[in-house]
Length: 444
Image (cartoon, rainbow, N blue to C red):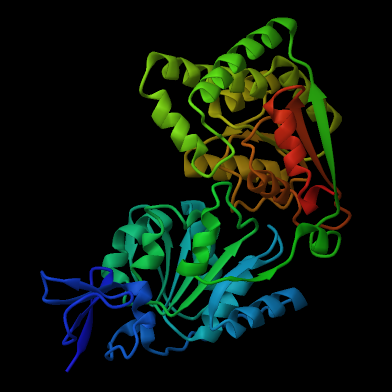
């Protein structure tokens, strides 16, 4: 008689004839079959598996928030798809409430996975206020696993081989972080029959978002910024401002870019392909010419992203919006600290301690300071409802990052008009990236 048990993120099945069959793989070490935990449901005529993930439990909400129509629609679409799928809603539109309602209605032990400790503790606060149950935390030095638990992606990937049979519902916040070789273990090593992904921008530049269909389920519901603009989100305007490189910087930029492009052509590297960047790194590491091309890539990028005219224009915008609350975004810490010194505004980077970060955002909220400059750490999950102006000095070429940054200033407040500035260096790679981003609905 066949039997099954959970073991280190997989399910071991004994008692079946030898040989591979479907998703099952024969494992001589155990003289039985093995299947990744997340694929156990695909095993035909699988033996019964006794695991807490399949138990029904009650998580009664002690605080009931009435969902908006689109949140009810998103939840209905999730359950219509069998309790598996991805919901895409803009920042500030209440994705978290969809997750909380899913936890209540699934009636399973639930694990919420988030990319940063800031988000982990935000979820912990929301869940503590909603459910009359202890909320566990896994990550940041905490290891307290309860029937309702919040974890970072790193900690969930590390411990899922131990806890993969415990939770019946996984909620992945900022789900675009999931499809990487390491973080995907959060999904692969879990038996959870119900899986909900939440994000404002699911699509990834490398196309890895296609893997979410297998790990979580299909995209079951989507509403864009333009659909909720002025109703749930603040109305906003987007302005693109071009600056010119100095004559000396233009000459240096053209020289460095030429070296970089020549290397790509000589080695037939297509950067627009799925593995373009990885191919470039591999080829660049093999020769002096390649290492010089990598240096040229970094130099031309720096010349465009940190052009002195950008810093001057940023200072002008801060003066123009001196009575507003501004967030300034850069791609790197060096530029963030440069703007902080020149414009006398506090900076938040990955080096900023949690207490200091909280204090700085508190000063922005109460008006003690009128602006904060940051690199990438405020792209996701930080609630700054008071901010109404975003100034992007530099960033990546991805649409996701810019939609996330736009979302930081869109939280609804009475009589609020959000303003989003993107400063780009003319006739550089930033020009083409800006044109691609403007094809997104949020920029129209």
